[in-house]
Image 1 (cartoon, rainbow, N blue to C red):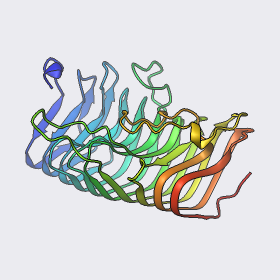
Image 2: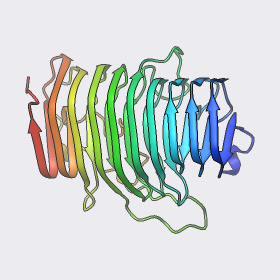
Image 3: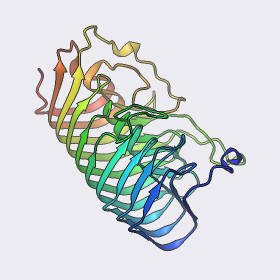
Amino acid sequence: PDRYLDRPYIIRMIDCRNVLVQDINMRNSAMWMQHYLACENLTVSGIKVYNHANQNNDMIDIDGCRNVIISDCYGDTDDDALTFKSTSEHPCENITVTNCVLSSHCNAIKCGTESTGGFKNIAISNCIIKPSAENDPIFGLRNGISGISIEVVDGGVMNGITISNISMDGPEVPIFIRLGNRARKHTPEAEIPTVGQLSNVLITQVIARNTGKTGCSITGIPGHPVRNISLSNMILEFAGGIQEPVRPADVPELEDQYPESTMFGHLPAYAFFIRHAEDISLSDITAITLDPDKRQPVISQDVRGLTITNVPRP
């Protein structure tokens, strides 16, 4: 957008092929640190990013790229760290991420918000999420808003996301999965996108410590459920401390709003609130609160095919 023309990126590549970015340090950009748009055969390895100078200080934005390998990177950012977007007809597809250490005042791992071209075949593994070394956020929260955010709100299809072996410390919300209908056009000339699809997401082997009171959510919107979501083998530690029950009916839909893991306020469940969904599996999950909490660990509304296995109640 024109309003960003006086805020340059440190790296911006558009429609490039066979790109290697390796073993460099980057610090304090005017905008996102790196933006790779519609690139193919991209490898990013061994980089270090510290980005706490301005708003929108992301670590890396992979935007409608295919055949991407990201490994052995460090990022400490005010805004989102590892970010996948799709601001055109090009999907983000065939992407692997491994062995990264991420810190963010916002979202450490994020798909979205822009989703027009969709997301396909993304695998993220063996990553650490920890509090930022920077104490004073420009935006966000001191220890981060979310660890993992998966979002489709501007149309597009998400299919085939795998996230595994994640250890996180400090974010308000460990996991946020959201299908909404913000319906923002990727260009002024484009048609308004229809509601997208979000399905086939697997998140496993997650440890989350020192997270907040909000709880995790997996939500679609009326008539448009999220589908085939599997969460397993997790140890989740929440702050707890909510003494008044929260009714599902009190949680607003907010289907056209910007997606954020804290958008609904404190959720009806201290661990997982699930709404407008089909074929959801929760298995082998230990979810505890540090302070006593009146909420149940799992609450669902308008869900077909919910399977809960070995998720103990307090």
